[in-house]
Structures are given as C-alpha cells and as structure tokens.
Length: 227
View 1 (cartoon, helix red, strand yellow):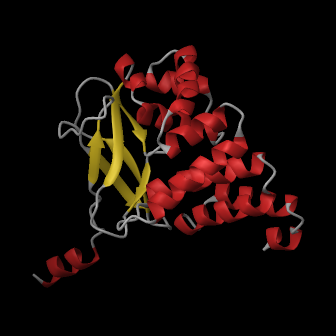
View 2 (view 1 turned 90 degrees about the horizontal axis):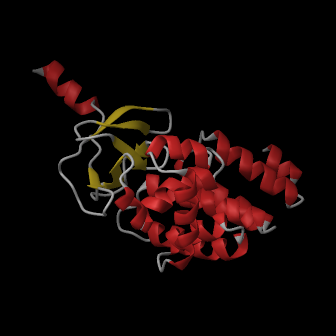
C-alpha cells in the first residue's frame, strides 16, 4: 500500500481536454493521449480514439502543459480533407499558426490536413474579416500587415492572460505570433517583450529564445541579447 501511495503522490497529473471537431462542436467521440512531460512540463499529444482520419490541428504543435486552474485545455481534431472544416475560422486559424510562425509551409499543412494549398491560402485570407482577435490577427499577419496584426494579437494574448485558468498552450503560440508581428512591423522592443511572454511559458524553448535575441539586437541591445 505504501508503494501505491508513493506512486499516486508522484504520478504526473492527467491533462483534461475540451475537444471540438471541424465544425466547432464539442465531441466525446475523440480522445487525446499525452506523453511524458519535458523539462518545462510540456507533453506531446496524439489522437487516441477517433473515427476516420483524424488530424490534431490545435494545439498547433501537438504539445500542451497543465493549466494553472481547473479548466480543460482547448483542442481541435478534424477529419482529414473535411471541406466543412475550412468554413470554421477557428480551425483555419489553427492550421495557419505554424505557417505564420515559419515552422511549416502551406504545402506541408496541405499534406497534413488533406486540403489543397490554394484552398488553404484562400481560407487564410478570409480570416481578416473575423471579429475574433486571434483569427483576425493571424489573417492580417499572413496578409502582410504586421502592425495591424500585432494590435489584434496583443488583444488575444491579454484575453488569455486574464482568464481565471491560464492555459500555456493558448498563451505561448499567441505570444509568439504577436512577437513575430511586432518584429516585422519594426517594433523590436515590444517584440522582445512578447517573446519573453512566450519564454515564461516555455523557458527552454529555442525558437522564443532565438527570436527574442534577434529582437533585442535589432533594438540596439546586444548585451541583453547575449544574456
């Protein structure tokens, strides 16, 4: 009994997910499995139970960390090639995130999701009409309007930071997107601050550290960049 008690004491907490499908509907027909935590507490995710050809499009990099409250982690699982999913702007924004961050190309996302590259590009462009700051911000970033994108993305980051349960897999990618938008708009000091927000979620993250150093260097602060 003592050994069992110790196991329960040190066992990693279980991640809980709020899973929606390509049409934005909550579903219990899909499960998500999480691997062991890395040094920052982030876990690799994969789809467990599901029908058809499921594709996990959010979190964008298939990684999540335990939130600081009781709310579940938002996740989106679509069926590969389901055209209806492209009518859901939240799904489109999720697919666009790795493209905007430069960690995947449109062609790579096309192969992953089963949508034609041209269809994805068109759907990305439609995001600029969204009333949601995340969706609109990523659409503006993809459209080459980084200053406008940064305004929307900053609102989206603040919204997530003010929630009673702050979810790292929601804050990290939006802070990274905001940092990228600010960098492209030439606002290097603000960009470095945004990347610092991302680093607080993932202290060991090489992308955030690299981009923050570049922003600080562009801002004329090479000593801070070296630190």
